[in-house]
Image (cartoon, rainbow, N blue to C red):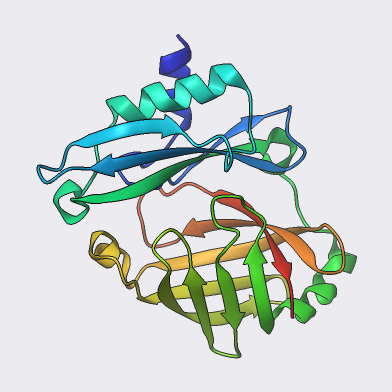
Amino acid sequence: MFKKLLFSLLVCLQVSISEGQIFVDDVDRVAVVVIDYCVDDKGERYDMVINQEKSSYTHQGWQEGCLTHFKDAKLMFPMKMVNECWQAVYYFVNSKYKTYELPESDKIKCQKFHLGKYTYENPAYNDVIINRRAHKQIEKGGLKGDRQVYKIKWLADHIYELETIKLPLEKDKHKEGNIIRVEIIELINDNTYLYKAIFTNVEDSDYLYGLITKIE
């Protein structure tokens, strides 16, 4: 039953980074379970373990369920990942954010996030630096330390759209051209916001949630 529940809650799991989340009531906002794994020269995974240092959601039952689910799932492009080690991320989000919306009075405050340098408040990606310009967003760092390039267009003070221009990893090339719609749904403090994001051009895409902090 547990495994069936987990499977039904996650979307697009035949990828190296799961695009979906599980709603729970025992996290403040967003937490993650991170699984480390490697792929051999035949495209088979091995050394699949929970990375406790990077996992901010520590519920043992859910962690074990994520690991079991990941072992049963399949990679979309395993032969583009051979002889390398990777990570998979499962997201756990407080259920109140299913319908949470940014108060009208806070929307104008989001203008301060239109430019600058940022980082993800996610232990799996907290070494990624986001440089946001008027029409371009560049992200550097991450597991492989590579550079991702997006066009950015603000649709409202609190809503922006990212068009994926360049992804460095061969396994992600099929995502170039994707459009991601990002909505700021809560201001945590003067420098940090909670967002939800969705691929608008991918059928059956599910929302992803996360926190971003402005550092410059």
